[in-house]
Image (tube, rainbow, N blue to C red; front, side, top):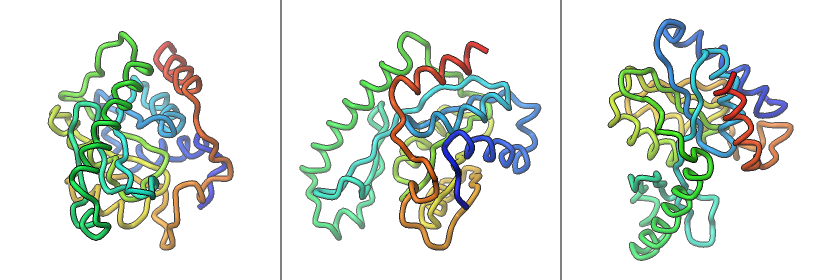
Length: 216
């Protein structure tokens, strides 16, 4: 499957979400996006469900010299998921893990302040909560975010993305949350290969989408 862009992917995913979980039509829903790329995917979902849209910041912990390879992830509140087996295989030191954890927490908090501003945190408890990203590779970032969200006791917790690796989909499903993906291709090299247009989403685009959805 090839998506034209994140907006088209979000429109397709929104319909698949309702097919997979029709109860969402009658439940209170909060839609959360992992910025920046998850926001244009999540916007059509929030609009279809008449739900508020907010961000959830989780940051990947990249391997030394291979920043795109996640050895874990951390949320803005410090909740961390580390693939210890992979870290050992790559001979990643605990000192390195602690160093990048501190760096990524600081960046997560900076982005949270930028994208949320003075708004209160979104309501999660007793609401169906959908966490959205533009794709899922290892699943580390999503797992860190879902660990935090599960502790908030949502009515139901869903992770949704247009495309996922089989490994990532299995890792997220192992948490016991509902997952909805438009495609889990057999041969997965990276999220970007499944989009015709996969430009970096800007901060300004994120802020504009949040405003447009929540002020409708």
